[in-house]
Image (tube, rainbow, N blue to C red):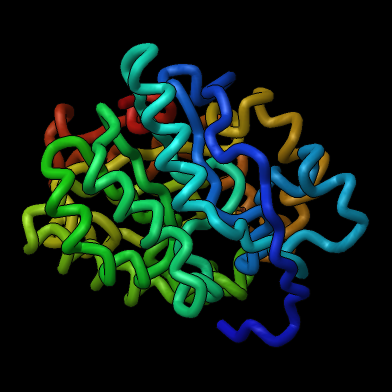
Length: 275
Ligand code: SF4
């Protein structure tokens, strides 16, 4: 998880909160502490969005660090709360706990603002075990926060094939366990579902009491079209695991999870991300 192959820039954005639209229309706003993402997952469709397409560099090879983000959020949060309920999704087009966050602490600075002046709800979405560092601030938000850690599979060799620069699965499970133990509302998010083993439910059960399953077809906001344009299917073919690529593949994982989770604890696609 090195940061050396990445081009970092510091930017001074004029605004931080974006209106929640499409998949996130249940939220008043999305909040991205960075632009770009060092994890560079193969299936990440953000690379096709304007923020990445106009950059002219490979997705995963650049990250913009938003300077003065906390001061901006403090101002925008106050303004938006005066207008009505504020529900935030952090983050929709970057990982708020990617490696540079160890040093820059932009995400932490935003959480400090929110701990003082809480939004009505905050959904935190990450793949990184660094999220544990901010347990103290999540605790101050109480039931107004949910921390979702993506665990697409329990198989490290599969994870490495699809997202080699993202954190190892065992570290993510450990993060979920610690946050759960601290009483923070968590969710293990299997999205996009990747091929996984029969043991997966038993690994998740002790670390998260809520699971969301999503795939390319329900979750990429375009019925799978965006994902098809990334050529992800080829990886499944190379692995001889085509049965895991298709609109019904999520049912394999859903049925397995039902052995240890109740229907109330299991969410599919958008339902698991709602405020
Ligand atoms: S961590 Fe999220 S934002 Fe970053 S590359 Fe992977 S899917 Fe995209």
